[in-house]
Length: 371
Ligand SMILES: Nc1ncnc2c1ncn2[C@@H]1O[C@H](COP(=O)(O)OP(=O)(O)OP(=O)(O)O)[C@@H](O)[C@H]1O
Ligand SMILES: [Mg+2]
Image 1 (cartoon, protein in one colour):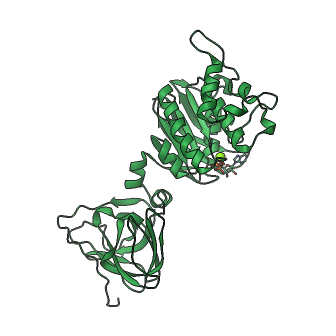
Image 2 (cartoon, rainbow, N blue to C red):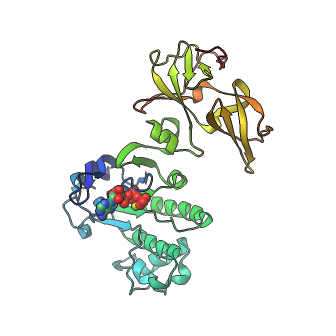
């Protein structure tokens, strides 16, 4: 293991509010992880504690077997690309990137600077100073400076947020390949789940300073630990339908008594309030025993996004083919039990992911009778 964060917390000043709460995380040697979460969830605070620019209020940080949380930043062997770039104004981009790199037999710092400049498409600005550069150029210079360094850990705080989507997509692949080729251990901070998915071996989802789940992109998608991760991760978000466990399935909240019958499925005890989670891709249109009214139907060139009203509930469905349904029409819809997620309505904790049924004839019926 390369980095161990053990019960790390951060409170700023005399505040009793924790920006980071009891965070424990392990990162393996050569692993690329992402801290993913919304603005203010504690991502930068976590990085700054690891790099040594903020003191941890509680907990410990161990890097390559060394306790580092008491050390000054310069002794931690950590390189960081800052959210605010923090370039040295009197130095050219070239000297910023190469700062502190010493020539050694078999290692030419100028060559590393050149390679990184090519990789990040900033070759033409190497002789210029930061003051005359655009935000995106400064950001790439800052990223290059962090990647140029030999360190036991590379921390990258929103390193590509200023770039246009096309360039960002290209650089993601290049930066990931570079970190793997050099065997770097890296922590990327981002609020962009596409970026986290594209780059990270594992993703730590944070909210309100609390780690929600730590796992591979596939684990987060297929087995979200709670309703927060389930609805935060995935685009468009998972449909979340409040329901209660009935005799042979789920009774969805609302006045129309829409029912999902799940014969043979072991559900939580009768009467348990739950939330039924269905990803937009998991709902089929044109078949199934539910019915809903089409609100909008957009073809995006490679997939269809359809919004529907089912008894006052908004349902979003994504299909890989065109859906022939006009706004206002009523169409059937359904799902396969293997695609359902069930959450405890009170705690948000996941109760089950997917159900294997012996028969494929599980049906979904809309109960017409009142309660
Ligand atoms: N120096 C500081 N003094 C007081 N509070 C701070 C300080 N820095 C951050 N905070 C607070 O700590 C919380 C976490 O901030 P942090 O910068 O870690 O969030 P973040 O996840 O990086 O957000 P963003 O995506 O906007 O960069 C926020 O509520 C923020 O207001
Ligand atoms: Mg931040």
